[in-house]
Length: 307
Ligand SMILES: [Fe+2]
Image (cartoon, rainbow, N blue to C red; front, side, top):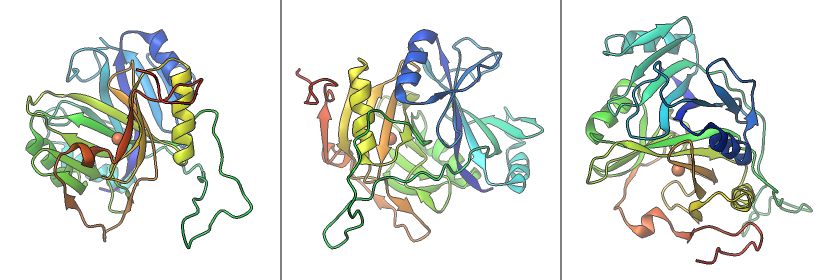
């Protein structure tokens, strides 16, 4: 089956007003409320849904408190959906509708698969001039007042059984490993050609399950900074950022998200094809971040936040 990326995510939350304020400030667009959900969209039509934490039609939470309950994966075509029906039918919690199927992964996260409803918003970032490659000519780089995320790029989970969860995504769904921390962490992309990872599975020594973060792609490094400074100015606490990951090459900024886990703005990730060579990395401070600002940047002074 051929995947296109993430069509949506669903959080089960307790404090709706706080979560709504966060998603508005994050730069997502409010869509019409549905009977049982409040919905926001990215520029490509990806959906972020808020549901009550005790909604009984959601898969059981894989950790206490507000957290992610379902990831909606987009498929390329009807043939892929038909293949998914056949492949997943025997799994214990398989459900289906006319245009979707759902299962729960070995880590307890709900998955819904559907023919993708997102579109290409035809958005470009600002080109970066580098030595010998002047591509922005007679044109200034932008300064963003705030971010408007283009898509939901990836999700990151703590897993209780990394081998079983990895096997489900690679052997059953066909995801590719882009890079790894052997036996501890796997960066997976859902299609051969595309962004470095759509899913990162990580097992910590305590083997506790949970959501680490949901990441949103923005246009370029400038929008990572503009979005982060805006969130900071609105009073939302940084977990870490801005900074840059050696693995995936992306610039990042992580905020604590009242909907669950962290939310990340990122840009400039590696783009992979069949020719990409996966690498095994050691877990280290330097491999997590080439550099990073702890505690973020103040929205007013535009300087590192005083401790
Ligand atoms: Fe990330």
